[in-house]
Length: 410
Image (cartoon, rainbow, N blue to C red):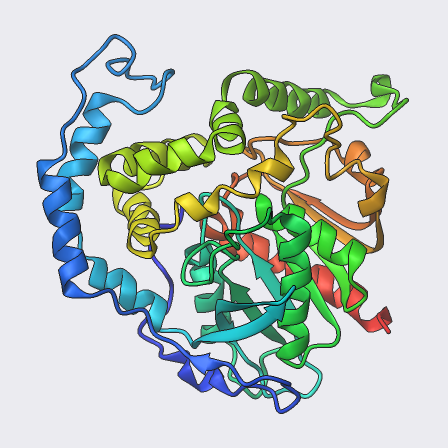
């Protein structure tokens, strides 16, 4: 997993010219966590109690979750962790907030962007998932800003914090809020930025939101995803699948039976869980750190994990990040997989990148039943956080997909 961010010595603030077509002018934003909050976190980490070792926490294979050894090392490193370096990495790119009115409520959407001055630049909306954040896309922003100038950048790259994540507004307190609400809000967001036509890319919850966006909103003209969890399509003959396909199904089944308990908890008891995780940085570290180690092709460094965990802590968003799991976890009798629901069958151009250590991989033949799959590429490296783990690979796929489909889009 990529631990550094390329080309942060380059200051791409010249990519900050908002298109003249924008209907609403966003307000420039910088991350600036108060010193008092940083010191408070260090104190909480220092005094945090570690559970006594058990048979389960002593296993070196981490079969039962994070180990005592790992949490001790991570705690020690977190005590001296330099958050200001992370802040500088984020602030190296243009950032904004924009107010979006939706259902009689105004939401502030925080986003990073590389705006192009090229008249025919393609707007690309890039969406993170859980427990990810906009930090996942910093390597891609770094690559593009080092290769291009604002004059020749072929794309407008827009990377928002989903509602309830990062510095975006939380979901409302007086009503349920789901992925259709997120999709509607983000479509308005893109239109307000002046993009009446755009492409969306996403993984994890961002991928599921992307599916709804492209299916329900005419402004979204094409979609590229790197996550498409689904069960076998109705009446599908699995005997036609390859050995590789059956390995994907087996990997997915293992996750459902032994790696999915977190999603059931986040879907059914998010309130209880949020009180535990929001009150203890060590609890948050264990809950999120486990996912970054289990869901990646190569274990990320502790410092990389601490970047993401610190981001959640300082934005105080772990509680508000759970709401998508009501939509994505089959806890209701009438639950239908987003990917197999005919309502969200993708009629527009659909591209997909498959990575070997994805937590819920699906065979290509299954994915093809969910939409107009015109681009598919399978890779030998990478996991659930592809934008962070293999940014060059994911970016090339997105660029190739866009170059293939955009010229035909009206």
